[in-house]
Length: 253
Image (cartoon, rainbow, N blue to C red; front, top):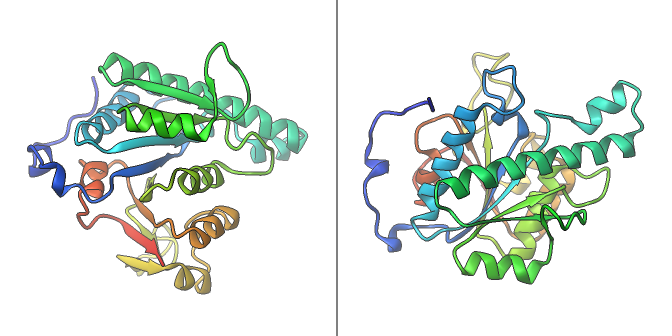
């Protein structure tokens, strides 16, 4: 059974005017799908994430998703085991397609109309990425999942999220992680680590904080796309984030 959370005010009906972010890119790491299971995709975790996406979709938010493939294969890890870096990155891109199809299947079983767009042509299972078509899907109330990264090796799915958010003129990137924000040092190693509520891009760069990889971070900074880093496992955080409540760490200009 999916993990259940206690009821809270976050689950009560919300007026559309209360929604702060109308068009979002939700960035998920592939590892979140694994949960505590030995399987690459834990069914309970997948269902909980999709229920959260459905919840914000029902608020009228235009939702697009970028998910990594690290629960199946990570290109950098493959190169450390002797796999050619370019080949390994393409293998990682294909892993994101598997995760994207899993998300699509789960969302559609919940009654949410969903489209997968792939940066690598594979017309039998996904649409090609076409920016104007993606915007049209969002305007028609469909969730759009961007698979296969940017279609190029040496670029992370963080960069994909930053690129798609810039192209779609998204209001924000919601970066779902296993920690509740950005800290001045690793909170797992340092008990005195301090979490930030807000940061500017310049401050994050100056302190060399690991918000996103450098390419993704530069894209967001240059195109004025804010990033909200938050804990996916806390109750109702995606919903609370789109309503503008204080969750995680907001990085902006």
